[in-house]
Figure (cartoon, rainbow, N blue to C red):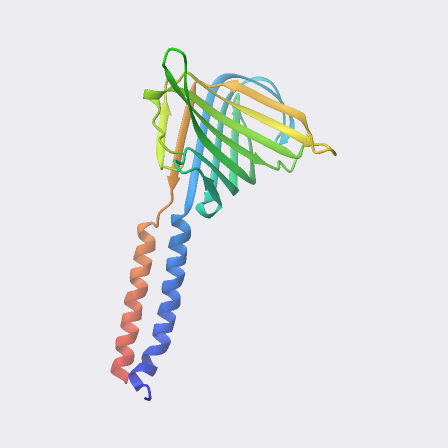
Length: 241
C-alpha cells in the first residue's frame, strides 16, 4: 500500500522530533546518573611536609587549614556493597582546595574515590561509627600517586549518614574525632611506594554532602518547547497537504 501524501509531509518532522527526543532523553539520563560528593575539614593546626604536590608551591610547617575535596562521578563507574556502606568509583573528576593561613592551594585531577561506613562496639557496649572518604590520583607534579583522606568518628546516635550513596548533607559540631591525611608517593621500580611528603591534622569541623543531579526545570521546558514546535510544523504541513 502506498503511503499517503500526509505521511510524506509529516515524516521528516517526525524523524527530526524523534532525534531531538532521543537527544533530550540521553541528556537527562546522563544528568540523573551523576553524583557529586563533597567532604570538608577545617582546623587550627596541621603538620605539612608536601614539596611540590600542589602547583602553587611547597607546603611545610604547622598551619591553620581548610580542606575541601569535591568528587564528581557517574553511577556506571561505581562498585558498591549491597548495603551501600562502601563504594568505589573510578574516573572521578576531582577538585582539591586547601587553604592554609589565608593562602589557597588547589589542583584538579582525575582519579578514584571511595567512601565507607564502619561500626565498632567496645567492651562497654558503646557503638562508634566511622566515615572515611578517600581519593587517589596521579598528581602530575611531584610524585606518582597522591592520596587524600577525610574522616570522622561518631557515636552511633550522632551518625546521620545511612548510606554513602544516599543523597544527604551532614554537619557535625562535636564528633569524637575528625581529621584528614594527605600522602604523596613515588612508585619504585619494584612497585613499592616511597613516601615523598605528607600532611595530617585533626579538625574542628567535618562536613559531608552527597548530591545526585536531576534534570533542571529548564531541561523540561526546552523539551516541551521542542514538542510544541514539532506539533506546529506538523499542523502546517497537514494544511499544505
